[in-house]
Amino acid sequence: MTVSGRIEAAERGATRIADRVVAKIAAQAAREALDRIPEGGAPPHATVTVHQESARVRVSLELGYPGDIGRQCGAVRHRVAERVRALAGMEVPEVAVQIERLHSAHTGAADPGRIR
Image (cartoon, rainbow, N blue to C red; front, side, top):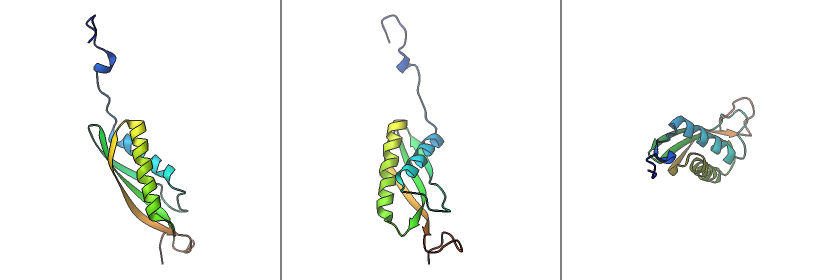
């Protein structure tokens, strides 16, 4: 409170960022972290649980095969945590990455997404 009795702007309310907004930030960050989305593959999808000033994130991905899956998942975890922290001001103690499908460059159009 100031001397004049007025309440400072920063003390008048609270800002709440919806889970779906944080999920969109996380999904975009995952797209940024990937080298590319495989042909015929779906873009990353994220779900988020926000509790106070932290967000737990689950990202679902489709990746190209062959490829360094561990490196790609690590890059996604790092980029998602960095972008959510920067844009939403939340700590990200956990980013779980789930691989939904591997798309092989060798299978062709006959059976997309299926590894033989």
